Image (tube, rainbow, N blue to C red; front, side, top):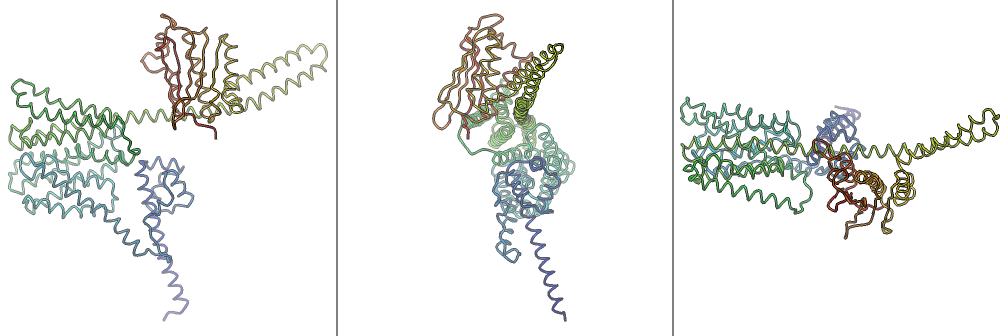
Length: 637
């Protein structure tokens, strides 16, 4: 029999093992919640790791539950993902003894089975939709098979360890759906195996080669998706899928045709339904709260235009054969599809392609359109080739549009960061020059004055020149420090700093500049006052190019009504623009580069205004160059 000490030691070991298992499950739960929240926020591993200043490998170990997340790191994660700290512990029900309670076990089981159960329901609905739409050859082979796309999209977001659950959930639903159309058992088995093959291969390759979503945010990722999901993986799966027709008694010499039908069915599904589904879910995760705007109206107009053109295409096709209009009518839906891609990027492109595919298939099923003259199998193949050739360039166009917009946004963000860094550096250097260097030079000048009284007559001239040089250098250093960052802007506010700047500007350039600041303006936030001050500097430089010797007028006043309060800045010169050298057209021709891009001056002003949420416009409609800026009136706290 075991002694008392041995029993105590054994109980301690069991308790330690239980707590270790519970700690591992806790780490895995927190890691899964981190990964889920990161996916919802649309951040990649690299972006989140950069925000936390940790390595990507460490963040991966956190998400996998292999390493414990410290309390401080978890707080930083919550801040970086903009989520409450309690989010990482939701769904974790614990007992005081450190072991998971039955409630926690049931909750975990429910969370585990929720995805596969939803998949089985969506799989059944997709199969029923395919049977409802019908086919152009028989009641089994469809132009594309939605259940494959549903399984493919589910696997893209599911952990690898749970993929078998999704396949197991799809199997009984697949059998039920195929039995409704009288498919034999052997064909059901071959069809399900090839369906799982194309979904598993496509999902694995997309996740390995493209990583995290979005997958259609630039040309490179979109073309890799097309090569993976619409070319390579369907081609491999079609090697076995072709035997579905052969197993029902079809001749083996038609294997090439069966392979092409199976390949095109999977490729078309991954080119039409899958991109629309993936881009829609990505949009729902990253979109702002829904507010109706003119873009929603434009989207509805695009959809209506596309539906009308597809309907017209189906109705007038019989007449087109007589008059030779068939090639032109094939391009009838293209303007609406391109419109959707250009205006709404990958989301609009994929949605337009899917809508066009559904409408054209529906018309062909009804006996209308251009895909009804040959035998049923040839009609299906022609339809698939047409829709696939339409989908590929449109998806690439939409992805390229999104990539260009994203690059433009990154460039803007980078310009704002550089602008902020330059302002901070100018403030620091200006402060050092004003408070340190200038004071040192002033003290040196006073010391030179004292020395001047004691030096002999022979050296007094040199000492006097030294004193003058030190005083002049002190003035120049103070002028440079003021140019870098006026100290009065922080100490006395915008109106005082601008008053001193305008006075110095008028004296230096020999022109008159009037400053009108509304008494209701008051003190603004430091970043707003700095933006207005710099915009005045750049605005004066801009209007001075058209009339170098004319006076200028600066107005700053509150604007806007209701909850939003803005500050309106106007910089203009009083000289009428004349034709020729000093005209506004000449001004803009000088301010634009040879390739027609914006001038550096205007682009810099716009970037500075956008940094504080404002906008700048250079107007010449009145015959005078006028710079107007509208800046949100953020008040000093």
